[in-house]
Amino acid sequence: MAATAVRCLLMAAAVLAPLFAGSEGAFLSSKFYDRRCPSLQTIVRSAMTQAVAAEPRMGASILRLFFHDCFVNGCDASILLDDTANFTGEKNAGPNANSVRGYDVIDTIKAQVEAVCKATVSCADIVALAARDSVNLLGGPTWAVQLGRRDARNASQSAANSNLPSAGSSLAGLIATFGSKGLTPRDMTALSGAHTIGQARCATFRDRIYNDTNIDAKFAALRKQTCPQTGGNATLAPIDVSTPTWFDTTYFENLANKQGLFHSDQELYNGGSQDVLVRVYMRNPDIFALDFAKAMGKMGSLMPSADTPTEIRLDCKKIN
Image 1 (tube, helix red, strand yellow):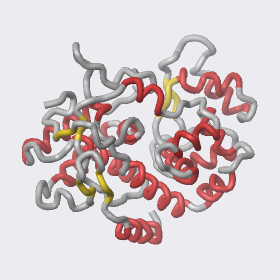
Image 2 (tube, helix red, strand yellow):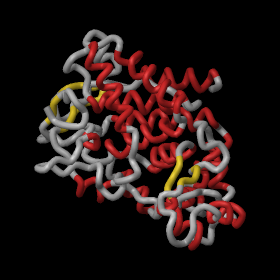
Image 3 (cartoon, rainbow, N blue to C red):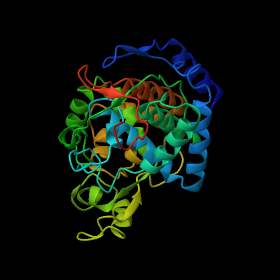
Image 4 (cartoon, rainbow, N blue to C red):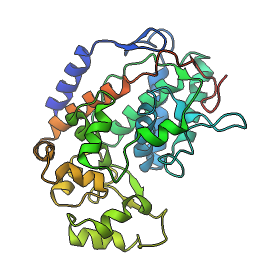
């Protein structure tokens, strides 16, 4: 990354005030674990380095895991809870089932952290740090992660089914969904740039390649080769056709070329309010990097409601 981008990110991190974590009355701070668990960030970085080296796609998966957690009642690790005979979690909600992955990576990191800092670090904070490191390890920006979250003792499958934007969302729908979380259209477009990495199942983009008209014909034909009109729902394709394992701005170039994989992606560049910003990001990687880091900080500050019961889980899959 250009030196100017790094300087901008450091400046942005320095001026971010500690964020209020409503459910427990605590403050989020990048220094929260400096004394409580000084080796935390080294442990997370090392584990994510290994995970991404073994499978670059895992970086995108952990980033998506963080997004799907934060958009459902705040960044409280509720998405990590397994279903039990008496409890229905979020893992099998429509947007998550057979789609969200990386739970095992978070479990591995949690076990390593617990070995040196018993009952100290929340699963929610581990996910936040792992998402940041995922982006950076794949060539994207870094930022100071605000810490001090707690883990929810409950989850909501219904909220997971209703709070997350779909691949078929309109621009107005995207703006409304992100707006309901206190995120601006600019934040939304920057965060959508996360689609510069990762892969998607045929079922999520089939309507786009067979029914949309604002799509490059050669691109549609390419995707149809492995995504038939019927069957093959789980077949994967890169979201960014150009550089699917590198965090850059080619995603926005793809949109300008009508090569957005999802209908919701192409809505960002389809004669609407975000066209200009897409072009800005396409031509100015430093601006995109800064906006993405800021938006991740804002999303990461989404907290569960004040009446949500919380704890520091010892095992991310289940309540204590």
